[in-house]
Image 1 (spheres, each protein chain N blue to C red):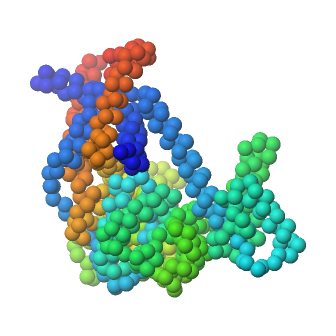
Image 2 (image 1 turned 90 degrees about the vertical axis):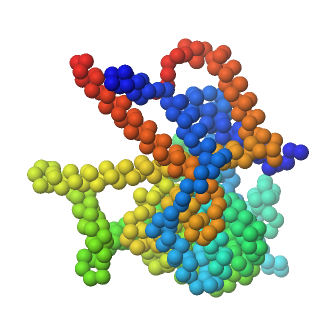
Image 3 (image 1 turned 180 degrees about the vertical axis):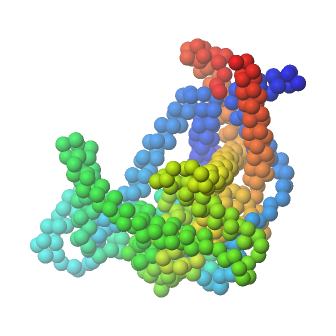
Length: 282
Length: 281
């Protein structure tokens, strides 16, 4: 028993670089050899799906991209999944960006989904209005008069020359708002300055780290469902029946979580044994 | 053979592995990647702000493109003479005849221009007090914009959300959840009430509040771990695809080169020799 305790304490003091290597291996292995672990949509992901699914055909949807390359693995699969669902149902999509990098992410997602998969027409089925600096002021601008905020789109086409912008003056002309957000400014600001004051139905997809911050708005009914991190993206892909990069990362995510939990338990046992031993020494 | 995409992939792999190399220890590869990141970010943001905001929305409103056949008065000509000076300095940002972004002339935008210049003056210690005017405007505007939002969504909205019916068409589960939510909200709020000593029943309620807070912190930690692992998966997915034949096995070559160079660097690094055998904890 003493030998076992010695071993546990010794392993508890192992160089942290071994832990990095183990995590790297367990994350990498499922990427090369997928395990096919089941994905079960959560209630909040289902609510996002139901809300979008219930929109009447030809609805005008405002999609805001507030993420960049650093959070791409979590948010980009959500943006792609939501775009697929929206285009499948024949909605018109207006894309804005509160982050400068969001414009590149949105362009990439639109190229993949709208152009390559659905062969849609720019300006008639979708438009990338692009990035405008100003954080909350941009949201206020879209809420009050979008034409003052955007005189040209991301391709420098005057707004007046874009067919699908006819009749769009402010946020009340949209039927639904989706915020793909990785932080500030993002979902919280859209709720505070757009969804709550105007009553426009809104859903969101956020990074895992933001879930606790945004969840109270979902529970209070201020947001209709939330896609929470990479699992949220994978669940949405499952709901629309189109597996993508979110689904492929979930095996690695699940295995890594199990290993981290084991490390935490093991670390605590080692810490407990070490403390007991030092108490006996003194 | 080496297209821009392939070169981009090699750079991405190098930077990714250079950042990961910090897990071994601080080293020149990490330093290179860190400096590139800071420099590129600063340049990228400055350029992005200029071309998406200052040029179209500020200069585009102060000096909009003139319609053909429009004649300017004396003051107008004087005003556009200033613009022509900028046009001489940098024509791509100040094209001939004005900035064509669909705006009309709005001279009130001189105020943000002046405030912006005043903020830039903060680099000169003698004139740094000018920056306070710009900061005052930004702080005041941001506070005004956010105050309403917070009050409406975070106070009124959340109070409404925490009121859950206990009778009528409500399931038992929803009632239990509602009661837990009510206890958590009240005890959590009371924990942050410091005008009364946390003793007796008040201390007990505060302690219950702490447990709710701990559960919340635990959930935050769990989500944070999930987020970090997701980002790791994203990087590994890219490394995997860039390790394919289409990218000339960029990941494998750069990894091998980096391991060899780090080994040589560690061997000749005096600091490394001095700390050899001391594990990082």
